[in-house]
Length: 241
Image 1 (tube, rainbow, N blue to C red):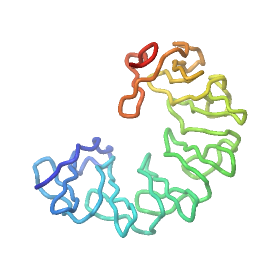
Image 2 (image 1 turned 120 degrees about the vertical axis):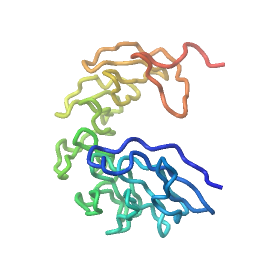
Image 3 (image 1 turned 30 degrees about the vertical axis):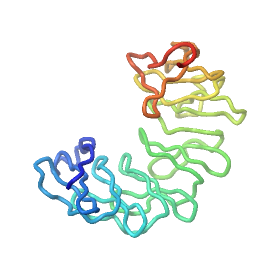
């Protein structure tokens, strides 16, 4: 009996010659992929597999997660301790406790040198070097020297950041604080607003650093995520029952 996983996102424009969707299926205890007509595209052969994200899926091969393309080819130039998903043509990988990045043919294009590394977004990625976080571009060039206690990759031109003193807010690509680091935590921007936390309550700020909604909402968990609905939080006031 086949078990069918949810469909992945649509492929990037570069992959439009491939089937629009490939579906992960399990047959006789092994995973493979079919297209929307039910035709087998990649024979079931893996003990673990994920849905395609863009042009690649991750499958377990020799006890390691490795990228698999839509033709069923494993990207195996080198086996890494850990492997992230491809984002903007690069995927983060761990080798000997350090993170770097590979391209879509498996070449190591940014040498492993970082304690932590985030996915690329809007052309940049946040990385940890030593005890601090900074920003690199797709060539591995440092764009912001490591000086933040925490830093996320850009979202709508701004980055959630935590200062060495522990305050959270948002900085621009030059490292200037746009949302003052006066919050306990901050999340990435979505639709022009971002969630911030103060004294255990949630609010919203805009890209100019203004509080759209002052922090006074309790979080309602929805599959581990906070949902923004028409620039408002899907939250409720007061104690949760």
